[in-house]
Length: 632
Figure (cartoon, rainbow, N blue to C red):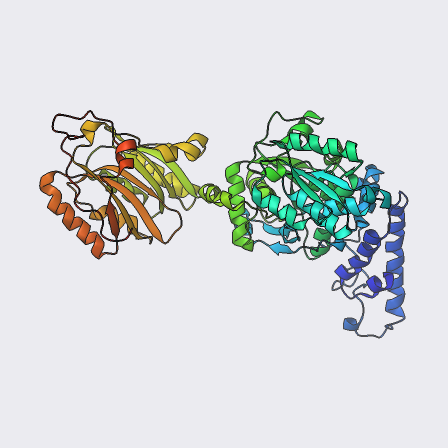
């Protein structure tokens, strides 16, 4: 291989000789010196080859690109970025020995490729545009179990002795690790007992059972991970099975570290400066971090955790392993109360920083990942992407080369509604006060237009009227322009972007029951219309000015049809005009249905009123005009 590298006509192929040496020789403490000697011998061999095999009179374009320094068109052995001759930086490797050399050797000798594939390193143009950097995604969602967990689980099991394999294995997981263990046990024909909490989504339970062999069993026990783990420990002691830990095991850590090896092999044309890893228990970050720092210590390795599960962040800050009182479950694949003692020790050495990201930032990262790959990452699988976006903005980084590990795509389908709701980082959620008078609605809307209004909720309650709405701004500056325009027009407003109560609950509860005296002569309609740019504006502009709007609810769901619920106060003498308005909407492709007699309307949106002597439940309530314009 030295001859191959020495005779190569390209500097990066010469670097390939060194990579072969580094990646395939078991390391000892003396080998950094051996590595430097090999580089020197390789360069000497190249000189002999140039003078002998090619001859002094050979044409320049026939010679290997190993010319003397005086020849500017050919470079000596150098770093990929160019420059003077360099030796490999082994300072980090030597200073952290024997941990660094041991884990490097274990990673290079990991047997993961019996079942794992070398996943793609995909360019991410949308993320690159958003961050201003050159971004790549390491696609661990391409593994047979759709996450990186197969690497560590298989490497642990395959390295068991024949005696331990005969005893069988046990594991505890609520998701991806369980799938990795089941898949590995089937491939190696090993008996496995896999414990999962009873609260685990059925889709994940079914996936684990689908990978398991006839010798294995999936056991649902306990209401949380801790109770399931206690059952796993009891099984291990009673049956003598071997535990396959999800993160706090050297073979598991080394198996995850093979991702770092692949990143370097796939980026010979790039100068990677940052690698972002999700952190749950710490196995992935420890494995990748130890490998990259041993081989390319100039690369910054950044761990990323959910803000409501910052186990590694808090532990590194405290200088010891910290057990969290509770963790959030949105990024359930990384929701760990206590990181491993071994992973903590290694992350202390290998991680440059740990950042935390919010639920909304995770949802935004899922959207970015989908745009660039057409794959829907699970929340934990998108942590690194979210961290890369946040880190770039906070540190104002541009022009850098970054890699984020997209670590899993076992998404629960039922979560997509929530993710879609929270993923739009361009959406601005505000509360606005407007005068309770005819025409105020359209005046407010014109301040937003032509920006897309994604939500609009209102129920009559008094003067001024309170509106709950959201719109999509083109940029932070564009958002400021809209808010300044509202202020100048006398529309008071509050930015609700960071109000979790408003985003999670109040947006669905705005309005409630209106006072009886304010809902006389009120009629309620549902409208549907083609969801095209400007459709909502045209709907509002067509509303007769002498109709008072007493309820309005609209929410964009990305469908091809827009749906609006509207209550109008229409005196009896204006009912013919209402009929004309409805006919106009029908002729323009809008469909409608009157809901004035719907029991839900009277139960939840109208104040209870005592029956009067005439038997009417509400004063001056006109009879329904009709029920609908057609199917709706």
